[in-house]
Structures are given as C-alpha cells and as structure tokens.
Length: 353
Image (cartoon, rainbow, N blue to C red; front, side, top):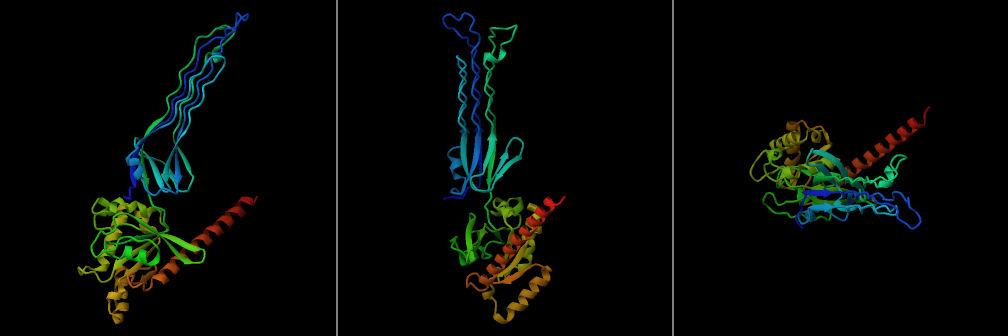
C-alpha cells in the first residue's frame, strides 16, 4: 500500500433541531397553553485514533464527514432526539491542524484517544419556554443553531523510539533489516526507500524498541529538494537519532562533509532536532582494510569534534549491530528509570505541607 502521510478533510457537525410552537388542545380543557418541545442537539464529529490503521490513504476516497442533525421539537411537550455523533478513525500519530487558522487542534498519540473537531449545534427552544404571566399563549420558538464546519489537515508522524538519519545509500534500510524483521527495499542506487518503514528491535526478554527508516536526505531537503522534506517531520517524535554515514562512499565524497550537510538540513527544518540525542554510526566499515579502520574513525571524529556516542559497524555483514542495539536499549532503560525518579520526587513534593 502506498504510504500517505497527509490528507485534507472537511467535517460538518449536525445542526440543532428547531423548537416547536404548538398548543395543548383537548376536550374540556379550553386553556391548555403552550406545549411545544425543544429541538434536539446536533451530533458532534470526533477523530478516534486506531492502531489498526497505518496510513491516511482512505481519505483520498472520502474527504467529507457529517454528523446527524437533531430532530425538531414536537407538540405534547416532546423534545426532538439528538443527532448521532460521527466518529472518524485515523492512525495513531496523527496531528490535526485547522486549515483556516493554521492552529494545531490536537495530537492523537494513543490507541482509542478521541478528539472533538466539530461541535454540534444546540437545539432550538419550544414555546413552552416563553410562557409568562403576561403572555399565556406565546407563539414564539427559536430555530436550531448550525453545527460547526471545519476544513482540517491531517499529518501522520510515525511513532518510533529511534530514527535513522543519513544520505541516500548510507545503509539505513540494510541496518533496519539486520536488526529487525522489517524488510524495506535494498538496492545499489539512491532513494530506494520511498516511504517510512518501522521495525521492532528485540534486544532481550521483554525488551524492545521501535526503529524508523525514513527516505534519505540530501542538501536542500529542508527547502524541498529530494524526498526527505516530506518525511523530516517523522523525526520529531523519536527519542534517539542514529546518524548513519558511509565511510567508503563510491563517489569518493567526504563522510565529514555529509554529516555537516545533514546537520545543516536539520537546523533549517527544526533546530530542536540538533539538541536531541544523536549517535554517529560509521557504516560499511567492512569496505575498509582492518588495519586502517581505527585511523579512519579517529580522523572523522576529530574533524567533527564529536562528543556523543559513536559506533563503527557493517550493517550488511552485521558487524557491531548487536552492540549498537544493546546500547540503544540501555539508553531507553535509563530514560525510563529517570522518568520514574522524577515521578517519585514529584509525588513526595505533592505530599509535603
């Protein structure tokens, strides 16, 4: 299935039903008075996150969603029935934006989470509400209020713990195939990855994390060059970035220059991404003579003035990939432990006088 990560839809909440103006007419009751009921409220439109969906492709075929209108009020003090709500299923990880204001309405990040995107109109009042000591037979009623209508932009951002970053042919797809059951296309030409792929890495019993392979970036990606601009936003949800670089590129380009170029694209797209934990992964080390690997790694690290963790691996030969996965798992275990400590400290503070 083609990966679709953006869609524009229209939602229309139900209008409220009209109030009724009627009078009680029964034998031997000459002054029955007003008995017109209120109209029912219109239905709301909700977006519901569903982990069973993984693309927005369904919204290419249906773009308009409307909730049910409330029923009109009736005589004999009968109120109109409220309109049924409309629930629209979307993938987990969907961001909802109001196109009219460019405001982010909400973010659906957990299964079953609901977001109200259009509120139904309130039902009109029947004439029973307008009876008074000076107006015993009111003929006044009010119409129902129109339901909200909005045009929304849906953006899907994949939910992953680790995001793979790098130039085309850096070996990202090969790495995710080596460490997980995901099977993205691998070939000896650039841009073989045309859509994000998720893989679950199982590093031990009851220990796992999710890794995302996105299309490769090139210089100018933040301005629209290549395929990367379409998928840069997927990195915003990841906790750890693995920056893959080919240490022996066929075209003879400098790995240091490639790293600097990607850093520039990240800074132009979202400077906060550069502040996220980012490990350097020197890939295709098997193409370098064993006695020259250490010197090459030291030269790259010194030129970059790298002060974060780094790894030398061969994704194709699966050299060093296990150690990389174990280090990533320790990183996430440390994050969970730290979050637990913060929660405990917060609880103690709440209990303190």
